[in-house]
Image (cartoon, rainbow, N blue to C red; front, side):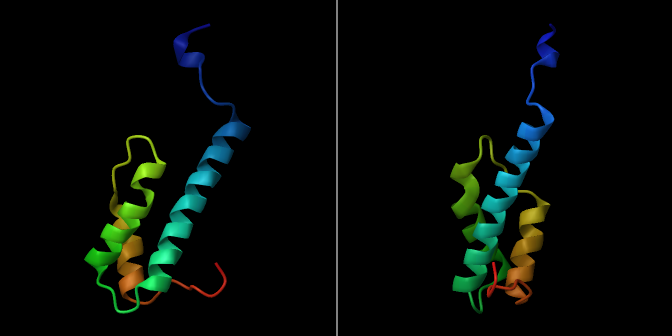
Length: 81
């Protein structure tokens, strides 16, 4: 076996991704619920604060900015999440 062969199987890999998506979704919706009138920069900071300790080697990317912009624009539904 090569060390490059050591990796999560596909069901485990999918579960990891699904769990990560859930953490992100919950953070975005929570900030949207609590942040009426919030700026994009404030939303960006709050999302990052909520998720940074939930991931190994977390670095915010452009996707977080997209969600922060959507929060500031009032585009994130908060009633059914």
